View (cartoon, rainbow, N blue to C red):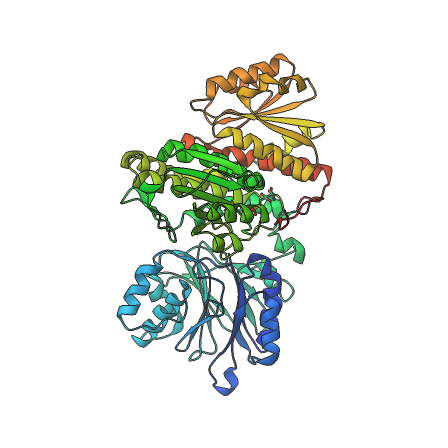
Length: 610
Ligand code: AGP
């Protein structure tokens, strides 16, 4: 999830671009850059870009100014190609400068094709490929930049918002959208394009939101929208009334709520380019494992990532039939663990900088185990320490309480389990096909659940005054009970406990009375009947039961005080849906209590101390 901005007008572009990028830095801060054209003196555009935070770019621009009244700017969240100067945007090919937010799925095939046609690449990114494609169309005779972009798009699959500038057409910026956000900001004798209103709100409040499959041609005096076939489209501008801070949160009250609502997109991005429906298989770029030699898998992680690992134990054992252990990283390294050659140690970390997990990796490597990292931050320390790594594509997670990183971790681990099971023969093509089919449908099903805000707000008002909560689940729902309790503790400061439902009668049942809300995860599946009997044990002690169950379950209502129904899916994937109401319940309870939801007391987003 990168930040993009473009300006065309009569004012100096660079300060406007940098000002906008400052507002977009929450979207990604691996590198930044601008390309600016001074139409007055027929010069070519000047590209200034570098690795690291925007401050590095500002420093560089002080030494290498980029004058001109047309320009594009970018702040990067690395997905394809490590953070570096060469991989920074804008990319320039011939007269074409380009910036991009999204992922070109078929980038490998296009790169090979362009390479065969003699193209020379200066970066590892998927984005540079599109600059070559546009340049190719212009060389092949496209009458203008808009036509060239339209023709080049025919070849591209994936998610994108591109902004393209040509030294040969200084009066135009061309942008195109397919699932990544894109807005146009309207001014007097000047116009802007950006990935969200945050970047341009200080300059204009009059914006046009660009829709899927649209190309927008922007000049100083106007904006023309067409579809990918060239047919004109019309859209009335909207007047934005949000404050700048509100805009950064996309109009949501907190980053956490925004990130809860971003989960369908984050999961879709994490699936992009990894599902091979023809082969009933999974592609995991950056992972070359000798699967048949793996004797055992050991997950190591902390906090929410540890809960994802516990779901991973369930997924990998059921889909790949490889024995799995899960360890708290902070315990693993001091336990003189018995790991070694033949063991695959999987380290899960959103930030990629958690010291407990890094030290646990060092311990595992010292003992000869192979280490695979799953992280949300490209080139962070943990993936660099590991032997293999692949990434979730949740985009930057600002709220300290992890939400979208967690569900993308569950999706990444599901992909890994299918990958392992297909390669060691434990998973049949038919079963893989069913699971892959369910995975593809997840983003829409998740959207259904996150749209149940109103219901969860009512439940938060009903239960939010309690002094304690108990969360119960069986099988893969047990870690979700732990995660629900952690979310509530982290942001509302209410004591909460997650417990295996079958374990309740061995102790915590003593806590139950009419004042204790008990959240029970009871989706359809092998543990349903047993969990319903645990639910009855709670109600027998006047406990208040909030059940998270599967849509179409007409029974559960008679066993619970309140019910939240989530869409049905494969048992292995249910945790990705059942955790959503728990995230939302915690959020609304904390919001009612007025705690600092995004930066709760005593917590840090990345724990870099032991
Ligand atoms: C979760 O909401 C917390 N922020 C915390 O438990 C977190 O999961 C833990 O610190 C691990 O962080 P990581 O995934 O970045 O390694």
